[in-house]
Length: 343
Image 1 (cartoon, rainbow, N blue to C red):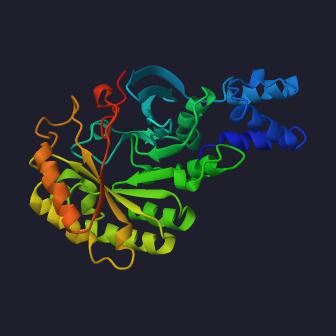
Image 2 (spheres, rainbow, N blue to C red):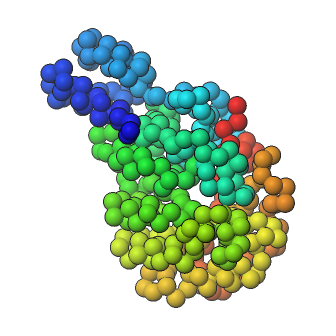
């Protein structure tokens, strides 16, 4: 059964107890503008309404509790307790110009078993509700941090969670978080139904496809999902996304030493992305240095700088747009592929 959304519950409660409609706006204003996290402290509301909110939803607006925080240069990682004694992690990145970006989770663990990812070693415990997804951001907002952009790149595969699109509606609701669609990025290992639905319902939300190998056999070994949704099929869906939206699609590519960082791999990546029609220039490769963890195989290591340089040279010679991702937070296991819900 689909969980009831917190903000829908509040709206319905205001109506059911015959309160004027503006009470809902007062409550959302208290949360998102005044940064009030306890219903009891919303003194602009009559006491019986505050009591009813606390009784129905609990004393705190934010439904998840921080149990551990780690910080390093420009990065803050928070471990949250969620219902069912589970844990999830979210990361805040602060760039030099003050821009604050967030990497949030959609699942407790992940069931897709990508070989190089720490989260995948946990297995899937459960999907997060839309409130649990958005409350990761609410936690930071209530502490006075600006929400400049958000990436669904934390624990879990976003498109495998049926509550993702409810979360997107909450985040883009102008009365609630009010995030612009272009400030949100969804990362996927290539779940076609999710890609197609995003194209239809949220065409301006950014989309990242985790490729990590241009060869189907090797990609299937690294990422078992490739057996179900092979590279060619995903790229056809991404071509359609580009035609429909006119937006860039990002191709994430983690460089693993001696595994997928050869000249042949670079040539094959370029071949995949060239000749895809009028929108081919809207493919953009993000090269990501690998981050090892205690729970991922020791055979996976970061590529040598000279291998990365050679890879980049080939992409550049083929006219492929690319960026080498700046890495933050690897010292506190907060970088790509490292989230593991450590106690």
